[in-house]
Amino acid sequence: MPKLPADVRPTEDFPGLRVKGGTRYTTSQGDYLCGGCGAEDHANGDTDAKTLVQDYTDNHGPAHRKGR
Image 1 (cartoon, rainbow, N blue to C red):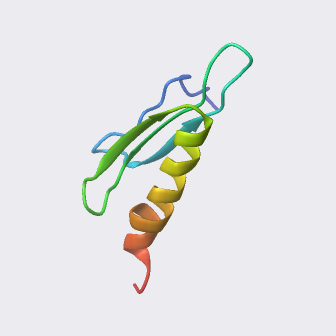
Image 2: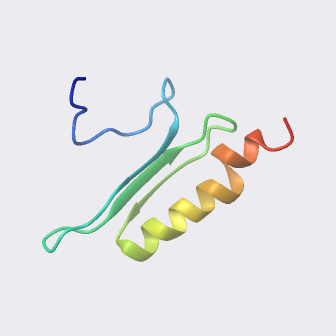
């Protein structure tokens, strides 16, 4: 199986959520692009990345699939 690039950001062709954990020298980062409504967001830092994941989960990606 081929290795994915280290920086895989969601695109219109491949919407979704990407979160990259921080290290001792870097901060956590995250991006999402919702395939249901087209909303997108970006976060830097642990707190912002956690908030981004919660927002995506509650209001976008999985939320658009509920009730189908």
